[in-house]
Length: 564
Ligand SMILES: Cc1cc2nc3c(=O)[nH]c(=O)nc-3n(C[C@H](O)[C@H](O)[C@H](O)COP(=O)(O)OP(=O)(O)OC[C@H]3O[C@@H](n4cnc5c(N)ncnc54)[C@H](O)[C@@H]3O)c2cc1C
Image 1 (tube, rainbow, N blue to C red):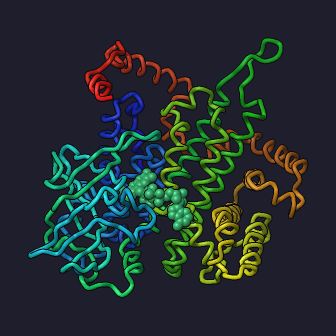
Image 2 (cartoon, rainbow, N blue to C red; image 1 turned 120 degrees about the horizontal axis):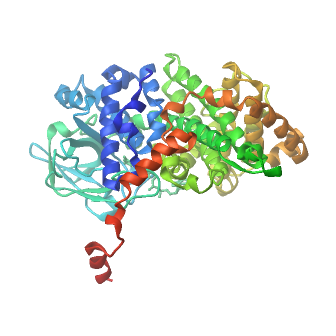
Image 3 (cartoon, protein in one colour; image 1 turned 120 degrees about the vertical axis):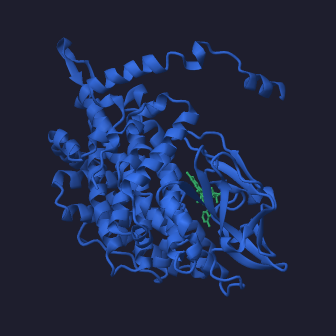
């Protein structure tokens, strides 16, 4: 669906000029607008239809990563968990209907302060009582961590809380419970929100949330059975099956961010001039130190974009198993997130001081993508799990359509060398040397496959060879030792090849950047004189009374200092 949300005042507003509270408020209003605009059906969400995946690729998610966070929790985790339960739990229908219209917003409370990735050790407890359960946070380490829970004016918040179930003193494993955390004005009794300080990157009300003797009716129990499960771990993973869907979905905004970044960096580098020889001015793009990272980002944005469409085709194909989908989701997110943060790092100083400000995207992108690299499946850990299973022969990963490529050879070499290494360990994957030698290779090993898959998908999409060549060089640069040792790509060869491929990409730079089709969504004023003038006017108008025009000690600052 081609929407024009970029024309809406909520997306035209100068977000960066607002107070933190107003920025967060605007992001929530954007979330409601996006839910209503897409109007996804329950089937779209439950079955992860093509429309669900198209929605994940809306450029608004590249523009406002905090919006992505809200939407991922609400649509994928909250509604995605509730909708399939409707046939057995029809009492959920009114709540689901409200959520589909963004009349309430939903969260998922899995992580606790003391337990991020080791979810089997969660400590939140729901004790069975007459007519329901009592939900408690028994200690600080059980405090639910990160899910944003500040009350929102006019909109109630709900969440799915993963909690240990205790019946007559017996631990019956971890199960999901439906809990309302706030109404249209305030937290509900017994539920406490402690908003965390704002992080760098985009802003949201990330919170510590705890429960003190909160009564839940019987209908709040969303689990399969009150009996002790035979296999608590498998059962817990079956409850959180939407997280692996989110693993893939959360990679998509990174691709959109890469496109935005490519557009901003190219336009700025073409517009910005410096004095050259003979008193003439030259655009900074004329320096290879500037044009190389720009050209690399353009090539990477194109290749990842082509792959993203391919990944969606794979996901919606009825013949693809859930296991195969989740495996590809891991490969996709690991590859995309790491490549795009690499682009942001390479371009880091290339927008000059302007690049440090939030309106120009680059400065906050690094933190935002790091955030999505940790949430919805920490990349390091999901790569360890997946690559280990592949080495053990328990899992197959998808192969690219084109295997006769340098990038696929590298993946194959990762597999062969690590299998060989593992076979030399007395205790196989339980050997201490597996931890020391193989674990650090899991993330790059999985990404090596991602690079080959992306390259192959881009070949099939008919991308110009120059973009493919430059993408390949970008990957070679990341692992230059292996390519020099095994593929004869010495530094001298690489430099020549890069120069030649970059020259061809730069020759058609304007067309390649236009083909990214992202310009209308770019909020950065750096891309044109017109946007720049308009932005400066806004700064003069709206920031003129910053701090009331005089920076001085506030009462809050005085109070904090007096406590020290
Ligand atoms: C932006 C953002 C939004 C979030 N939103 C939510 C939300 O809505 N709801 C929610 O429940 N949670 C949310 N989270 C929390 C998220 O799920 C956790 O941060 C994540 O599971 C990691 O846990 P942790 O932060 O405690 O890291 P830790 O568990 O402390 O991990 C720290 C380090 O240890 C490594 N590590 C841990 N275990 C292993 C292992 N077995 N093998 C090798 N290395 C290991 C990790 O790779 C990492 O490098 C969010 C997080 C972020 C960043």
